[in-house]
Each structure stands twice: as C-alpha cells, then as structure tokens.
Image (cartoon, rainbow, N blue to C red; front, top):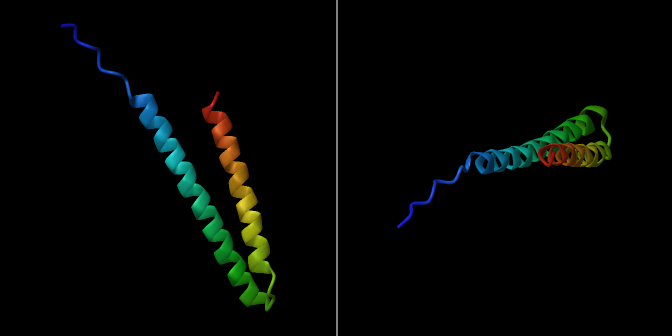
Length: 74
C-alpha cells in the first residue's frame, strides 16, 4: 500500500479565516453605522439620519467586501 502525502490545508484555512473576518467586519460596520445614525437622530432631533447612515454603512461594507474578495482572488 502506498501512503498518501498529507495535504497542505494552510491556504484553505487562511482563505476561510479571511472570509470570516470579512463577515465580521461587514456586520460591525453596519451596526456602528446604525448606532451613529440613532445617536445623530436624538442629538439633532431628526427622523431620517438613522436610516440614511445605516444605508450608507451597508453600501460602504459592500464596497469593502467586494474589494477584499477581488484581492483574495488575485
């Protein structure tokens, strides 16, 4: 019987860790944008800032995700 060489899973683990980090960063960006918008709503007595800043945080996080995925695919 021939023994198989152990596979090198370090690049697979590194890629999975990168994607996990991207997901955590995306969630944190959106959450902090929501908190900032809620705080600004209270401070300036407005009703649209929370929605607006949360939406901007979603777009920002999507931009960051796309940029990092393109970097990982190189």
